[in-house]
Image (tube, rainbow over all chains, first blue to last red; front, side):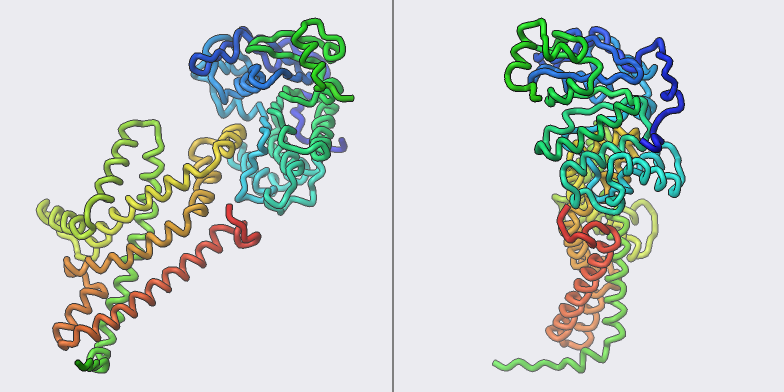
Length: 262
Length: 227
């Protein structure tokens, strides 16, 4: 990457920090009578890529959404970039400046051009001038290979392009950690490939990432660590190699059901 | 049975007709702008988590939508008078029309707000935008775009309904017509002319809203697709 402008200055140091960027400790969360998270703990170190995998309903998306406080936890501790996310008095806007999130359904703002989608938050939240923000938009769009779509509206883009634009929009806020919530689940295999390539490049540049994914081949290739969730618990965790030699019967069954391509 | 129409006898009063039409348009313009603001605030209020504000907005909307405009106008007119406050008929008319159209605007805007996908708001929250910024940058214009035809029809209806302001002697088009027909004894001709003038005013307003739409919705101007 020629110009990794989204990096925080301190991200370029390779010295491992003592504090993890994201840590969940014994997190509990119920929707009504349904216990979705039943004592979930994991941590993400600086520069690490963590893949959350598991069946639908295993709680992996909820766990991810708790990190950015789109869900409030019932009990347990979540610390993200120094923010105590589990506390009611957490400064949400400060937290969300440190955390970027990309959704399955892109959620670009349909009435704004791609450039306006990207420049809105840097101008409104960080107080960048219009010309600074426009330069930034060009840089992040170049990172995802969409320079020529600056003035297009979201509906004029393919699903893969919209998702890459959504990633660029998050990058423009220069987050310290990026969350990806099944970002390729709405895309066909070809478009999935172009989005995964962008994420791979981010990983290579040292971005800290937590991703919920059903792309086992991709998770195996990119993730430093895998967290396999089952019935609201972290059932098995370890390096990417656990996908090829799982120890629990549940993960064996999960990766054996044709999920692991390549 | 023979029908004899004498338009010249009525048309020689054209300056009065024009003045009346101008005042009708002025009433409609003021009430549209104020009612749009007021109604949008009421729609936001109905959506807040504050039960008191949401309840007050609901009572306002339901009260206005279930009472006749003429009664509302009299309530404002005589209500202010009995408080010892003196306002011109025009001011009272604008106030009453604003209160009336604000309630309908609130319901239409609420529909627009509810049509914004939840994911849009989550994406905006994820980018650390404040609640106010989310309303302003993410919700407001798309909501207006989604309900624009209903909204503009409501404002044209308001202009037509302003004819009942003749009852508190605001000198708008219908009030002028009432004077002219009692002067000339040419009621049928008078109201034919008034009807034509209302049609023209409606077309003027619709053209205005069409132009405003081009300014407000650049995406639609460029792509022509619904949001």
